[in-house]
Length: 186
Ligand SMILES: CCC1=C(C)/C(=C/C2=NC(=C\c3[nH]c(/C=C4\NC(=O)[C@H](C)[C@H]4CC)c(C)c3CCC(=O)O)/C(CCC(=O)O)=C2C)NC1=O
Image (tube, rainbow, N blue to C red; front, side, top):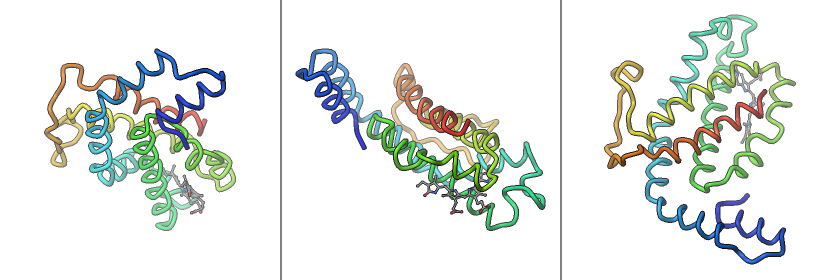
């Protein structure tokens, strides 16, 4: 498992090189936006249970066969496994966002997941849909800009100071981790 710092070391070492200017520049950026990163992680982690239940509910609304006999969220045992899995994925995405590196997500969550799902008959497309909904939610939470139309009575703002670009690079980075999950399942 690597983070932004250990990744720079591994990559320099593989070239038998000293840590160079561009790597230091990237790490400087990582440090200087550190508080934003922590806020972004917190905005996901502290809304996780709402995000998970909403994403799985949305996935089921769009495909109600999932909760009928023969569907992979039926009976309750499978529904519970599905909610648990969505929570696991979201948790590892927050770890990756905290570390600034995808390796924890790859090694501890995604490694072998597609094979497990295929063996158990867990539908990959539906799983990817739930992850895509969580990606959209995470974008809104990192930007602290959830819409009334989509969040309704559950709308919750973190009240973090809004910077001009609404943390565009952290939004993109978090999005890349969700895309990684979707990629691993397709
Ligand atoms: C730490 C990393 C980690 C992951 C990621 C993980 C996933 C994981 N999900 C599983 C099952 C499952 N996963 C789902 C998930 C779903 N079904 C659907 O229809 C939806 C599309 C989807 C939810 C979004 C279901 C229903 C099962 C149970 C399948 C079965 O037993 O028939 C299983 C098989 C064992 C079990 O049931 O507990 C594993 C190993 N376990 C881990 O330790």
